[in-house]
Length: 304
Image 1 (cartoon, rainbow, N blue to C red):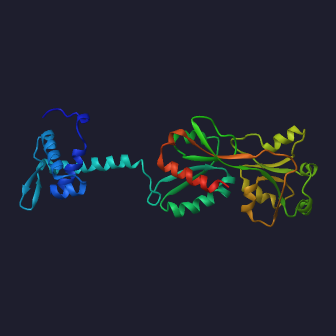
Image 2 (tube, rainbow, N blue to C red; image 1 turned 180 degrees about the vertical axis):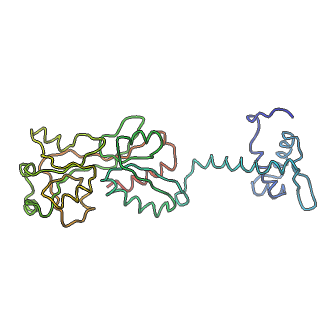
Image 3 (cartoon, helix red, strand yellow; image 1 turned 135 degrees about the horizontal axis):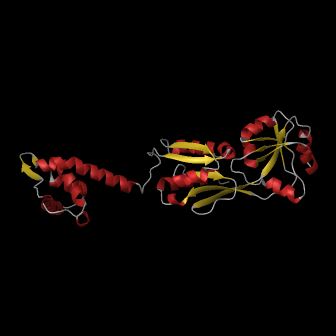
């Protein structure tokens, strides 16, 4: 037998062989493949020459497979299935997918964006899975390694090889307990800067810290906050806040999700620049259809 060079072989011959072997009829195979019987007959002839075997012969009730064809058929079916899987990577059906989307997010994003995302996923991709982890100093590395698909961030997006999609601008508001000494005043008159700085504050301590925009503004005025408590969890801080006279800064979107009568929100008594929230990912995913669908879904949910 002569050596086989795959580059010189039309792999469509395997598709034709599998159809003829499955239906045991050139006529039925040609109908299923939308090809003429003449085309199938010529293809079988070429494959017989390559494989040096008749493959199918006429029997009393249709075509009969030769021993070599019986041996080859399950192998050819596997090749066709794997080939179909390769090209299926360019398509994505949210209704049937069981894909697991992996996302990193802050407590803020988990409280404001993720609930909507889960609700929409349940309707548009009912069999998909979602894995969420906290944003950390290892998030960029995990994106690059493929352990994560995307991350939601509220600071300056990283540079290449990462890409970013701006979702919305956010601003900070103040939050105090309804039992705070200034609670009734801020509802009518707001809070002065001196009052804001007279009370101690509770802040979120991030693993991947960047200077707080509020503290940057205060430094420009030659002022600073008196920090009483630092903790890594924003929602835990809010629970602490309701039982104290502390002051906390939170993103404005978060306030609408709290629906808590024990808390009072107020406008901060100093200027602030909008804080950009973005979706980031590694550029290796730019052609991945499942990711592209997921990215578009998050964009539709998160944008105002």
